[in-house]
Amino acid sequence: DRIVKELRDRGIDARVYYTYLLHEIRGSEHMPTPRAEKYRREVFSVPVHPFLKDDEVELVVDSLLRYVPSGKIVP
Image 1 (cartoon, rainbow, N blue to C red):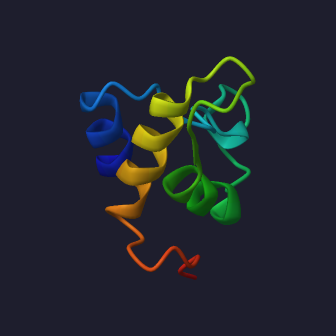
Image 2 (cartoon, rainbow, N blue to C red):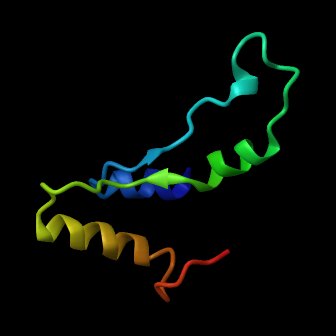
Image 3 (cartoon, one colour):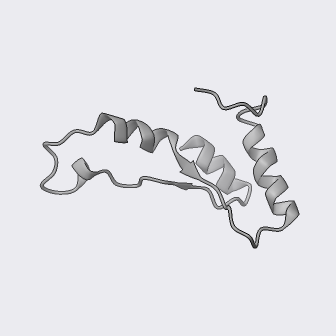
């Protein structure tokens, strides 16, 4: 959530990928989904489409590198 907020503050349309989980829907509360909860905390999206300008791509990449400076995925 913090990363998504900071990206949005920089003008990047980052979004949480999984807003609602199955067990949060009425009638499904009895089905906990720990993996889905983990993914909701860790997975988000950033703009990726053919109409992005070079400077917009650079802004997204530079902003993401603030969180993963080595450029390597951190488990």
